[in-house]
Amino acid sequence: MTGDTTIRRQPRATAKQASMADVAQAAGVSMITVSRMLRQPDVVAEATRLRIEKAMTEVGYVPNLIAGGLAATHTQLVAAIVPYIHHGVFADAVQGLSDTLNARGYCVLLGNSGGSTDNEETIVRALLGHRPAGLVIQGANHTEQTRRLLTRASIPVVEMGTLPEDPIDMSVGYSNTAAAVTVIDHFVGTGRRRIGFIGHASQNNDRHRQRMKGYRQGLEKASLPFDPSLLDEAEFSIADGTAAFVRLLERSPDMDAVFCSSDLWAAGAVFECQRRGIAIPGRMSICGFNDQEIASQMNPQLTTIRVRREEIGAIAADMILTRLAGEEPASTQVDVNYEFVIRGTTG
Image 1 (spheres, rainbow, N blue to C red):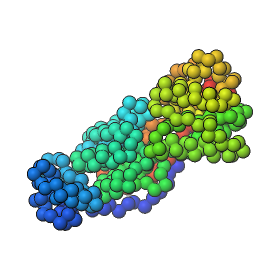
Image 2: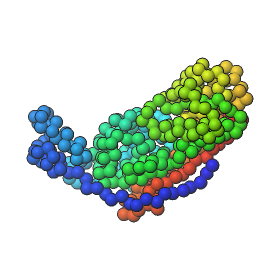
Image 3: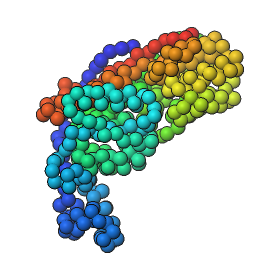
Image 4: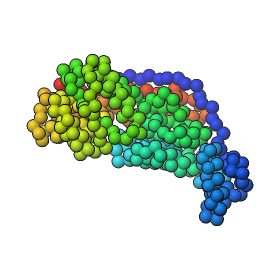
């Protein structure tokens, strides 16, 4: 399944960035006191410091960390936040982002949230303090304060890898839900009826929640019952995928297919089947997600959802560069779609 569609949205009105004066007024202190607290918090009374910190949160103020806070409103930096640096899926998108920005004289300042929305909020505050020209963030699951900070930042913001109903500013990605439905449709069409699902353990991962939603929609579409015993979770490693697959087999020995929301987990399932002498795809049909390099190098090769990750990063960069040039992108939400790649692990 391939294709490109766009959804046109009205340009967002930029909000005035909160200033030190706004903090001083909200805290009921002088600007000198706010400045002193930011530079030397230990010399400010604790009650005053707490009042200033509360005011900073309320008005969405982020200290300017560049050139003594006086030289510029933004830099030649574009900030990017991903859940995991070591996961190739996110690295590919950052590569596409970086290649496009570097060609125009911008550099990427990278943050790693570890999949935590609280960590993400902390990183957003730190990165905004360096006054980036724009910010790219993986996914659309954020704290309310993160959304407020990014809305008030007066810089282009792109959420990538998903298509949120209520984007902060702009987004580029694909429908994770539709991709999952496509997988279940294929399983059902090849006669599978006891279909397992391995997803991410974090409740903060909106992409995996959407894939779970698609899994359930696919079952309902085929009039198959939803069975919680056919669900399991894993972190991002082949070993974790193996362990999740083993737990599924122990609970549901009649399982005849498994949809893994990562190629790494699918690889773990394939390797475990080979150790146990379980025929693939005869006895067990297995599908992954993302079409990482391992998918085409396994034997049998892995059926999976192909996502154009570098293209997503490049488009995110183009959207930011267009805004910085004083223009509006042709669309503020770009759907790059996905491709279902059928290989040897499914019938």
